[in-house]
Length: 114
Length: 225
Image (cartoon, rainbow over all chains, first blue to last red):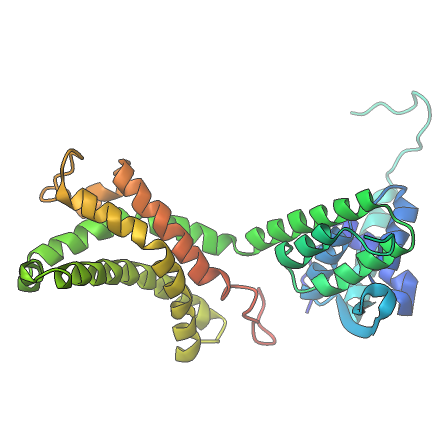
């Protein structure tokens, strides 16, 4: 059972990428998806570290695919979002959406912080 | 090295130095990316990042072990004083030094090892039993296996503290009065002998505890963190 703590920014992005990629969610496409949307490189090791954390919390599950020659005989590890993971994403979106309501428009010299 | 093969050294480092259960999948991902056109520099960067991230996570996951080992090692000079006081007051201690060489030296080595091992194992038991109880995973076999892990490391490192203890117990020029040094004073002792005692016990304790806690113990279903 996942705990009630909210997701970190990177974890949330990874969960969304896994949801978006559906059956093709393994290390390479997840990293590419993050790179494409963030506009900067990502360490595949940090993606795996976050996925391990998420799996430990029960928010994703993983399974091994078949080994392929182009990967030196190493199998892909596919990730799927669990029901608890999906619930956590929705909860995070609900909270963030509420908070974003108060976000002022970004206009030149229009916003003075308190 | 062909273009389809990433740098051998980087791959070797990834396989041997990056802690983590997912390294096979990660290695496959990096190879797949490299073969699809990523540069050698990119590959090296990814491998180094994976090692740093893996090691940081490993340390973070074992922070309780690390903290306990440091604290327990701080007490080791106190144990040396306690055991020395106990040993010199026994009849067997006197008999040991009346033996001919090499038996006297062998007995002395055995005594030194037993003293160190008692300290290390006491610490391990103190750390492991409550945690095994909390995770409902106590078994004598598991505890025994954990204790045995410390043995090879103890034998590997024990030559240095043994030589040190022989040198120091001779008492020449080190200013240590073993008759008046109390176990409590020894905890606060920052002289070289005390610091070296701590330094040698720390890796043995860490090695003994590292592989058996805490990630390898799964909590039973329904138990919260």
